[in-house]
Image (cartoon, rainbow, N blue to C red; front, side, top):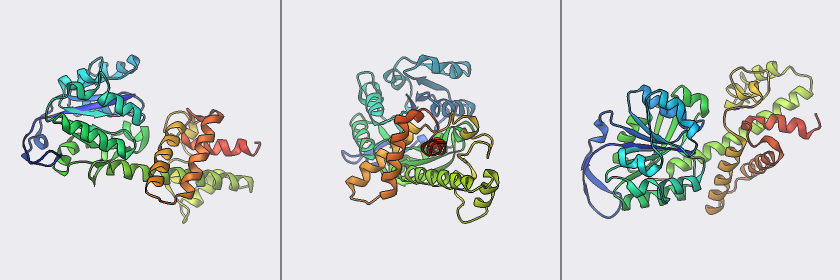
Length: 329
């Protein structure tokens, strides 16, 4: 679990009790003052490294002390709790596995909001329920801080290369301040609207990603069963109307592409457990909005079954292997 903190100063005049400001922001011109980072997992560690490479001092924490080493070697400062990070940084980024982790890191006994300074900018890059993002924004506003949701797309490879896509929701006046940091870690930073809209965009993207990966795995498996060479089939798909990200950039069949999880026994990448979690969020929001998502529902069930069949810690593209085993191969 991990989370990031980010701090900077600004002068503002509160117009009412809500996050509605008229102010002269200095955050958009913030010097490279310390940035808090909470959550040094597969995604958080390379993201924090890219902040360091861009000259930002990083003050970090994580529940697993062994995750500190690489950042310590690069000069980061490590704290024992999110609250301690909040004491030292007024720009904080969090990158955590799930909604309960975010709630604990922000509002728990040793959470950020126990010690947060007024004016602190809080950026959460976890993928969580949009309703939880809104709750955290309200809690932060009560403490005089600003919360923005900024989930990411691109996976570990993009995190390492600083090519993530950030989908940002929050107070529009603070977007430039958030963008300053996010561009150090990503190639695309998109403002989506008010708090929670970043999460909404991410949930929709991942539902489509899951459906597309299952479709790619089924298609490749069928072609192989019909006697086609998998590399040839992938080449044809990628010059035809069936082309998609799962076929041309993240092919699930071992031996078709290099540098992807399928070439490494499905290690690394985006775990099946996390995909099942994100699809669960999509299901919850679909239910709440009375939106029919039949393929999204089926994808959710497939990845949940995979988690119970030994695929929980493998990359989600292992759905190809799962399908092969289901047919007795």
